[in-house]
Length: 86
Length: 293
Image (cartoon, rainbow over all chains, first blue to last red; front, side, top):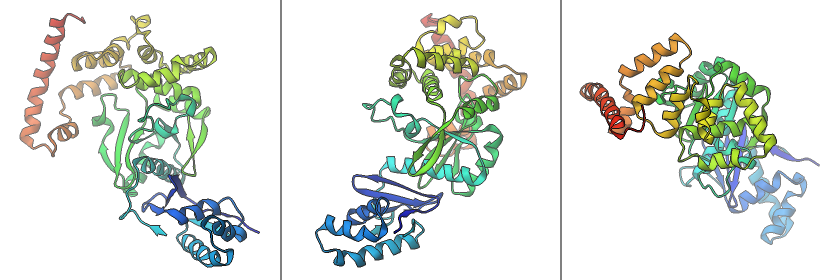
């Protein structure tokens, strides 16, 4: 079991269900909206292995349906250096 | 699911928070000591929840004076351009303002108006009692709560109309223990005259060398009154010489902001001639009003 954590020198702010995140000290500011924002916030407080279940419960689909899109999203933000671990 | 800033508007408060964090990351990389002040760095106990402008419009940090040059070089390397310099930004010469296309404005303070001990000693005093806050996920050093209160009070001394809420939150609503801590720190920093100007006790310091300066600054004196007060408050010949030069130099940065474009040689010359006559008008006006000697 493992947790995801914010990458080094990454800053983020959540305002009105939107997450703004940047790899500092330079722009760009990336914007996560809707489900993406929910996955980001949830990913930082639950075990990675159970993340898709939380997302599934939130959006009203089965955990199996949620597994791949959640995985794709995490791979994307991990590749950008925004998140590490998992 | 991930979009960039080319298609989505970023709230100004978000830019400020990320900008503060960005400045701290630069400081961490360079080994620069910074203290975050004002705006989002202020302790919640000192914020007025009803003040919509409490988070400010720029990022303010104090830099250890010995590290100011290193920070300046690092900021410029990361896309921050100088908007106004220490010499031309404010008559106190305390801060340099930078502008970044993504993060907005930054005021880099190497001293704070009203603090009369040596700037390096003042920073060391504040640094020794620092704490930290997490801003956008990044740990940012901040002065102690008492020091934050004092900074808000000193800031209010220069902008009495804007600073009413800050003085209320930092001083009037504080208890006896907080008052003692703030007064002790003001004494250590030799900031008691500016502080007195903000909290209505300036007349207790009529004989102090800084009295005229803070009376002019806090009560809206003319430029001439402020300049003479500043000269009287200067502690060194070097400072007096700098002030004397300021009297004759035209601030081309302020002039550009007022004109809306870079001033031409002719416009600078016109301003150079206009300044003494403006000073005379102010002096005559104040004499006619009979309010100040």
